[in-house]
Image (cartoon, rainbow, N blue to C red; front, side, top):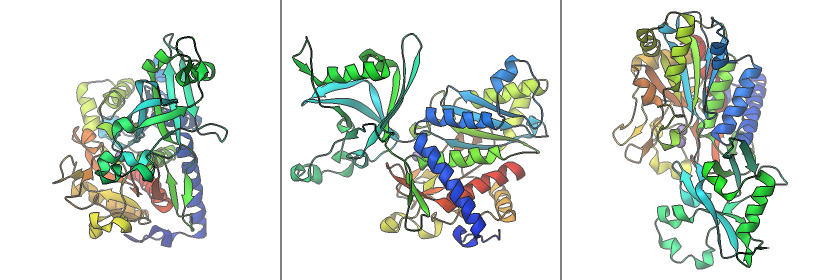
Length: 463
Ligand code: MN
Ligand code: MN
C-alpha cells in the first residue's frame, strides 16, 4: 500500500484491502456485540488466545517449565483484566514493547440492594459507572450482564436481553407533556443519578405477607431462572448495558455504531496485532485492563501491581532474578497507551480546534498529550519517541493523524499512559477516534480501526 500521510485511508485501499478492512470490522462487530463487560471480554479473548497457542503463566510456573524466546503467555487478573506476552530473542531487561488498553466501559451497575417495588412496578436501583450524560441512557433498551457468586462459592454468569426472545430493560423518562419543570433544568440535572431506576416487572403475585407483590414475583423468577435469592445481590456484579448488536452505519457502511468502542476498539486491535506477532527481537506485551473509566483504581486496574508481578515471575523463570533486572525491564520498555480520542463532529464544530482534531478515515490518532486545561494529567510524550513511531508508520504505509481532544479550555480526558510512564518508560497515546463517546451508541470508522490494528502490528515488530 502506498503511504499517504495525513490523508484519507479510504483513498489508498485496493479492492483487496477493502475486503480485509470489511472482514476485520465484521469480526470486531461480533466481538463488541457479544462481549459487553470486562469479564466477558477477558473470557472471550483468553479463550481465543489459548486457541492460538498462548499458555497460562501460572501453569508454566506450577509445572516448573522454562520460558524461552517465541513462547506465548497470558496472565489472567481476576477474570477482568489480563496481560499477553510474546517472548522475544533479547533479554527482558532490554525492555519490552507494551501496548495497553482498557475493556471497562461506561454503564450503570446494580446497587448491592437493588430490588424494590413502587407504583405497581418492580425496579432495580443503579449506580452509574464512569462519565455519562445520564439523559442519554433513558428510554433505550438495556440488557443485564453480570455474575452472582453464591455463599458456597458457586459462580453464575447471567446475560438477559441479548437474545431475540429475551426481554430487555430500561430507564424511563417523563413524557414531554409533563416536562415543564424538567425542560428548564440544566442538562446534568434533567436525569439524576437516583432517577436511573431499571424497570423490570409489573405482574403481582399473591403472597402471605402483603396481599400482592410485584417484587416477590420477580424474586420467584430470579430464583427459578438464575438460582439466586435477594440477599445474593450482595455478592453480585450486574451491569445494565445497551442491548443488541453493533451495526454498520452509513449508506457506504463505512462506520460502526455500537456500545463500548471506548476502549474495546483499541483492545481488539491490540489483541489482534499481538496474535500475529512472531519472531520478535523484543518481548511484546498486550495489556488489557479494567477500571480506567473510574480513575484506574483497584486490583484489576493499570495501577495494580499485577503486570509488574508477572514480569518479575517471567524474569525469575528465565534467568537469575534480582530487583534491578525488573526495574531495567520496565525502564527500557516502550509503550503505546491505546485509547480512543474524540473525533471531529461538524454538528458541534465549535468545541474542536480544526487543525488539531482527529477526523474519521484519517487513520490512527496519535496524541502527544491528553489531559485537560493546561495538560493536567497528561503524559506528554517525548518528540524523540514520537519521531520513532512516525518513522515506523511511514515505512509501513500506516495512515495516522495527530489529535488533541477538543479545544484547550473545553475539557479533555485522561488515559492509562501516566501510570506506566512512572516506571520511566517512553509512552505515547494513540488510538481510534470516536463520535458520541460515552453514549450508548458510540461511532467509529472502519478504516481507522484497520489502520490502528496495522499500526499496533508494526509497533510490536519494529519498536
Ligand atoms: Mn478510554
Ligand atoms: Mn472513556
